[in-house]
Amino acid sequence: MKCLHMCVRLRRFLHLPETQKRRRHRFRTIPEQLETRRLLVAPQDPVVVQSVEFTATTTIVDWDSVPNTSRYEYWFTTVGFAGTGRSPGHNDPFTTETRFEGANVGNANLDALNPSNFPGRRYRVWIRGGSEDGFGPWGPGRDFVLPGTPADKPDLNVPRNSFYGGTDSFTVPWTSLVEAQNADTHEIWVAKDGQRIVNEEQVGATYTSGTLDPGIYRFWVRGESDQLTGAWSDGLTIAVGSDQPELTGPVVNEAPNRPEFTWDTGVPGVPYQLWVQNENGLLINQSAIAGTSLTPDADLADGVYSAWVRQVPANGQPLPWSSRYQFAVGQSSLPEIPVLQFTENLNGDAVEDRRAIFSWDAAANTARYELFIADTDTGIAVVRRSDITDTAFTTDVLPANTYRAWLRSIGPNGEVSLWSEFIQFGVASDTGEVILFN
Image (cartoon, rainbow, N blue to C red; front, side, top):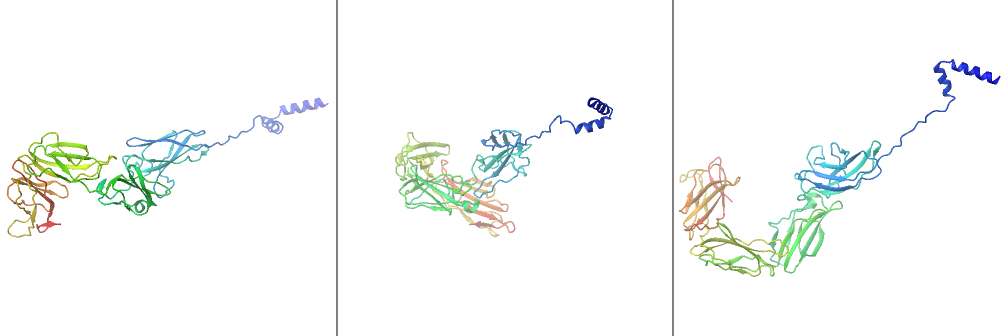
């Protein structure tokens, strides 16, 4: 009976519509497949920058790949004495490569990473990996500086990169990085013979040393804060306790054809360099001279010469050249430097308006004079006359403008003196008066 009952139930099931078969079967069978869920895995490792290199116009950043990463995000920010933190600014800061190569990192398309645009600018870059499941941690920041002179390098307010101190101390001023770039302090470094003798910090932008022994010193300064140690200034060479040597010979006129050059003593033990030239160019460039005199190996031709002397310390940074020294060899005599004088033209009847009036005393050993007048804005000559034999000259009518004038003497054999001190004057646009400017 039990078997017959089961057979009847089976026949009834087989004659059911398919939808009912499935419905009844669903509640009585084991699922053929279990549903599976994908495990979400974002990158876990920080990305470490391996190198930062540069072309003439781009910055190249390379990093190692990390597991489970399909793309990378990079983040650049400038670095200064005052911390700025990360600052977004790139239009599309993503790449599928393990390299960034470019110049633009800002919405303004400034090409901020172009070394030719912003030499010396400091940056920090971070990289992190990402996938469809999210981003991993940022890697450590990597600092770099675009090639060139850093903007945060202090500018020393001195006329040249070396000088003679004369006394037993020195003073150096510079542009304050505390005021200009929010540095906390300035670090001072002073060395003598390669050994540090001063290393201290101060807020002010002028340093005055204590009493120092005579010798050659080197000076540097840089800005500092908790966020950044800046770039050192250019090195400054200072000769403490010595005056600058000046040439004292040969005699100014009719010097022998093989003259002896002499000069004052500078820093003891530091060699000298002598430079001699005429209008045709360089004739003597003698270095490593131990004493304070030199006689050339060959004769000099008759004519006018100019000479300079300086000292070159062992650190390789030369001290300043002396003043120019002029002398004449053989039958030549050095023309005297004339003193140029100016008379204002104030709408009088004697001289037409807008004409400049010059005069000077006769100069010794002079056959003629050369007058040079230039536009002060452009430097372009408006008057250049080298045939003046008188001691006065009045220009043609000049346009309204500001001018500078110089005069020099020319000897009978073509010898030339140094230029006089310049005179600055102007022509008024409304009245036509020609007046002196102090």
